[in-house]
Length: 526
Image (cartoon, rainbow, N blue to C red):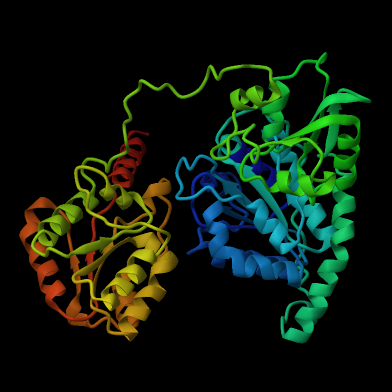
């Protein structure tokens, strides 16, 4: 897979640590490193911000570090990420963001290239598994040469598709070599201003690197051409699948940013019009429009020649190129949708049965959900949650609703999400004596992304007590049918309490439990 190619490339580039929070489509990168490179520090982090900061610490020590996350994780890591461009790096630091056009498993369709542009650092965007592998060594070398972090952006279709990859001889890890220049790293305003000026001064060298990059190249028609295509990342494959050697089309493949402006202007000068093909938002299209001027014929997502939303495909790119008139591989329209559902035997099912039973007794009850398997409680047969916005929002939204007068306001959050982003919200609620009931549905794993370790396992009671939840309003229950009366009574009791209550239904994820049983049987049979 593309994710595995990235992981192997990072191992062979001599990384000393990978720091990540699991999130589709990035999860398999860290899992591959955990399985195949025990010498690399690779335990899952509590969230993307802690991952980014730990990787920056490893870079400070002179060693190479990789940070992995899905696109929404960039929002969580943004504080440390943007400031890392100001501090600069010592050992190479690569931030891998896996975007999810079409929202296959995400709540938005944001484009991480904007973060790289915002932070003013180089961005790499591979077009194939081989490039994903090769780019890792290139990215770490570039990071150390330019003394800034490098952002690598991939999309779901590359992360989860497969191809053969030719590996190179691995390089050794960097020696320990902690930074000695404090002013780079202590971002007091006086230092930060100097560092920011240094970052701005480096911009021409970033552009020069893109102009000469082996990953930015022109192919196709030479000399004058009817059409020029600026093809970014994986879109390059879709363009080339639709072209033959005889087509009067010139293609500029872009896989390193800042954009190679000189190459784009040269392409525009010899073509009658340009098409920009990019998977994600029209970042490049807008920038190219500024380069070529308002009167130049430019097509792409903004003009409707390519779809404004969702991922690109060989079909819709072919339509934009005028090579096909229909999309033969478009999703079938007569197939009945089969939405996902909570697994049979899942403890979340019993939690929602109990919540629905009690909530029905309160006409104005609202249940605020969160990110995880249990988000499926929004679907039939439960239809149990009224909101799901971002990691940790259940507790703080419940608090805000309670502040406005909503009663009862109930938050449902998973164990991994609670340690990721829920603890600070619970502290706010405790400090403000908010009238909310918090349900931490603990299945002892990060189940939604495949059963990774959950950072707070066996610690939730201590965490809640440490944050100030009153012991008499902290309950642990086992969510199974025979305990339904006990659980519903506790929920009613804590709804009636005018303050912060926490209920922890705890039962192991049925999938991880089955996996453990299979492993035990296999070990016994050996």
